[in-house]
Image 1 (tube, rainbow, N blue to C red):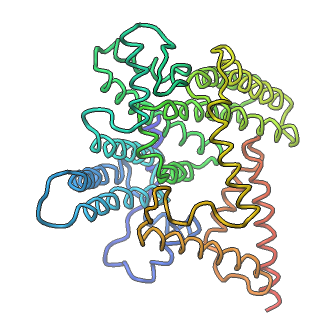
Image 2 (image 1 turned 90 degrees about the horizontal axis):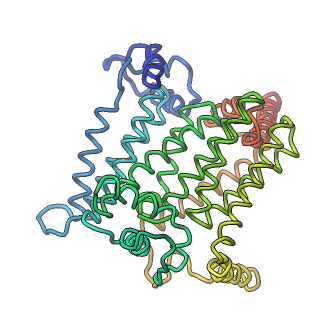
Image 3 (image 1 turned 45 degrees about the horizontal axis):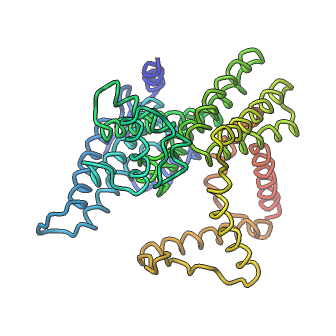
Length: 453
C-alpha cells in the first residue's frame, strides 16, 4: 500500500532537463527549488520518473562509503591516505548524497523512506565495525551483566553491583533474553538483533510523527536526517543500553498521540489509548525517559487546556499525562527504590555549575576543552565559531529589517507553507500559529519598505 502510493506520486513527474540545456542561470532557481521556494517549473523539471528513484544508486555509494570507513577503522597499516582521511571521506560520501536527495523536492515518499532506512543500516554497521565480536562500550557491559543473570538464574531483579538500578528496570534485558531463548542465539547476537529492529522502528515512527504534524513527507524525512546528525545517535543510542530502547517507546507514544488528534472524537479516543501500553513499558525500561515523557504529555495537556482544542482532546491528554506520571512514579515505589538517590547527585552538580556561572560569570569548563584537558580539533572550533557568527548575523538582520529589509528571504515561503499546513492541526501544532503571525508581520514590513522606495 505504501509503495503503490509512493509510485503513484512519482507518476506525476515530468521529464528531465537535457544536459545540453543546462546553464549557470539555472543554479539559483535550482537552489530555491531545493529550499521549497522556487517556481513550480523548476521542481517539475527535476522530477524523477516512476520507480525507485536514486535509491539503488545511493545504496551503492553507501556501500562504498562503508568500505572507506572500515579501512579508516582498521588496525592494519597500509600505504596511502591516513585513516582519518579515509574515515572522513567515507562519512561525507555516506551522508551528503543522502541528505541532498532526501531534501530534494521531487523525491517521492517511498524513496525518502527507503533512503532513511539505508542511512539507519549504514550507521548501525559503523557501530558494528568498531565492535563486531562482543560488547565494548562501558554501558553495554553493565546491562550484559543484568541480562546474563536473567539467562543463568531464570529470574528477574538479581542485584547488579556494577549498576544497581539496572535490575530494577529490566525492559531491555527481558526483550534481549526473550530473543535469545526463542532463536537460540547467543546473548550478543540477540542484543544486536534487538537494537537493529528497534532503530528501524524508531526512525519509521519518528518519520510518521513529523509527517503527521507537518503534513509533509519531505519535512518529516528532513527532520529524521537532522536527528541522525546528533552525535549520540550513531554510537550511544545504538549501544545495548536501556535508554536506546526507551526512546523508541517515547516516540511511539507521541506518534499515537499525534495520530489521535487528527481523528474524530470516537476514533481519536481509541487511538489515544494506543499510547498507554507504550507508557507502561517505558516505565519498566528507563527511569529518566519515563519522567521526561510524563513532563512532555503534561505540557501538551496544559497547552490543550489553554488553547481551543476539543473537550475530548483536553480530557484525553490530561488522562494520558496522569497515567504517564503515575506509571513513572509507581514502578520505583513498587520496586522499593527511589530514583532520586540515583539522579540527585548529577542534577545537584549541574545546578551548582549553573549557580557558579551566574554568580561569577566564569564558566566552570573552558570552551572546546574536555574534562580530561584535551583540546578540540581546529576544524571543530572553526565550525562552531562560524555557526555562531551566522546566528548573530541572522539576529542582526532580523533586528534591522525595518531599516534595510533583506533582498531575498529564501526560506520564508517554505516556512509559510509549513505554517499553513500546521494551522488548526491540534495541540502539537500550536506553535505554528505564532510562526504564521510573525511571518505575516515580516511580509507586511517588506511591503511597506518597498512601497516607500
